Image 1 (cartoon, rainbow, N blue to C red):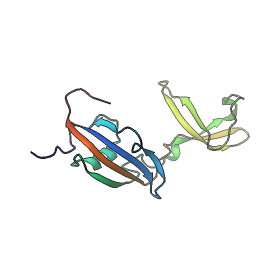
Image 2 (image 1 turned 90 degrees about the vertical axis):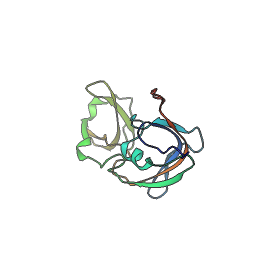
Image 3 (image 1 turned 45 degrees about the horizontal axis):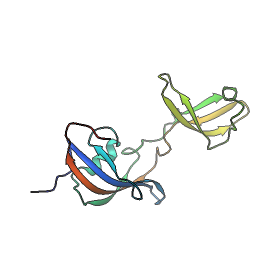
Image 4 (image 1 turned 120 degrees about the vertical axis):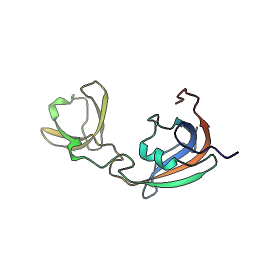
Length: 152
């Protein structure tokens, strides 16, 4: 009997780490509980999921993830100028401040203050990892056949 490989219809339990190209750690489960997802359930970006295909329990790998495979390229259209008077006086606006808005469907839309001028605040709504080359490190703990119930 062969080890079950990651593919469509499988549930995967793994430890992972996402690092910047220079090795700076962005996120990791190695010091905590492993993550579990079902292939294709949307919990993992397709580019991250794709590199796992064919791996089995016990495999440990590192993969380079390009912006196209990860969080996409930075989009200059995602940097918006918002009138400074749209912000309440109790917010101390400074570069790097994370702010949150509601979009047309009332979903949360986070952004980062990129620049503060006298009348306008530039807010960057790109994902913080957009445009970045990343390293995706994984240790596969278990691969199982999905039982039809999505476990998150």
